[in-house]
Amino acid sequence: MTSTHQNVATDVEKSAIRKISIRLVPFVALMFFINFLDRTAISFAGPNGMMDDLGIQVAQFGLASGIFFIGYILLEVPSNLALHRYGARRWLARIMVSWGIVSLLFTWVSNVEGLYILRLLLGVAEAGFFPGAIFFLSAWVPARHRSKILALFYLAQPLTVVFGAPLAAWFINQHGLFGLEGWRVMFLGVSVPAIVVGIIAWFYLIDKPNDAKWLTSQEKEWLNSELAREDAQKSSAANHSLRSAMSNARVWVLCLIYFGFVYGLYALAFFLPTIIGGFQSQFNVTFGVMQKGLITGAPYLVAAIVMYFWSRDVSRRGCKTWHIAIPALVGAITVPTALYMETPFATMVVISLTASAIFAALPNFWTLPTQFLSGASAAAAVALINTLGNVAGFSAGYITGALHDATDSYLVPMMVVGGFMLLSAIMMLVLSRIPHTKPAADVKMKRAGEH
Image 1 (cartoon, rainbow, N blue to C red):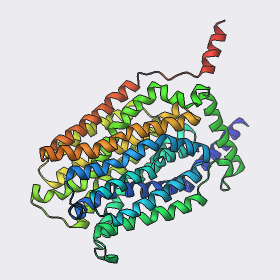
Image 2: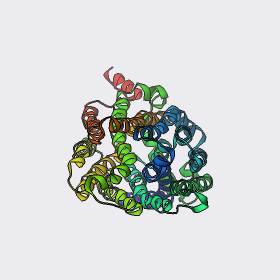
Image 3: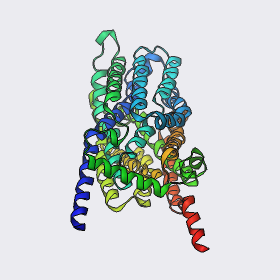
Image 4: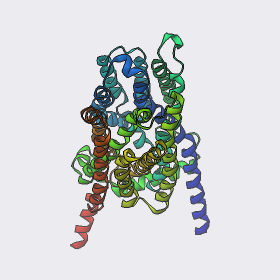
């Protein structure tokens, strides 16, 4: 009888997770796909006419790329707390429509000052989306399934470049459409989907399992009981407060780890198309716009495959220190190594290793905060980590561009990228030595037992 009950429970569990994987994850991943494409569209526009048309230097381009994160950082934590209060459906939809409208305005930018302003506003509009999506998906599934769910969600980021780079190149090749330069057509083409999908999200997303008509009563009961049990294990007044996230040493170490990965991610995202554009002078080869788009996407396709299988191993073993520390170390070594390669193919092979290292670690990294925090404190911790980590987003763009202009080479900037990824590897080892904070209730019970 007990065996039969366990089999039924297992079937319900599998069915519930499968439905969430099909109904919610692909749609939120689509939102993330559009989010990352709109955020990094400037990297495709820059070397394909925008820098020449607006008369901007590499350092200015780096500043424009990075200034996005100022507004993003300032509003990240308040936005995620608002999501926790008002619900993901309303808040994520609102964010998406807002950034779609701002992104659309890039179509008509006329000078570098206008570019700075729009990039700043885009950061303000997007603030809270990524940590909100992470928190939303994490709140739907028990901890043992989060690595799988977040890996499926995170596939959207490398696939944004795999498909987004050729798509951006196609739009750029539509030079003259509506009387616009190609890079302006590209901004127009990638912005409209954000507005459309944002409106759809308002009606499609669901805040909690009880509201999901596509779940059976048994599936709802199982999800609610599992999630409640996990919250009870982590529950204490401290664990549900914003102060607990701000005062937790593990949260701040996670901020440093994420900083290194994000620095590498955006240095690669913003400057890879420019580096590929430099192959002509470096290796005496010439590529068309579409060819550059396909070459840009190649490392991210490899990264998507590696991320999928790496995350499957995490789901099987549980997230271990080495699941994140090893990719960080690989990234630290390969980033500067790529610049010593003597052919475009060898360069892209090494860059593929770098991209694979970054994306192997990121979805599994995000399973860590909810292992020891829940409720509002988990929402605040995810937002805080993403906020301080994204200081790297601003730093990567500005520092990489400034160091390139100062040295007339990408060698020093990429050495800096490698250094920050090495920091992530070291801090992951530090994190493994910091004990989990025990809930206050557990401490009281232990003391009562002593008496």
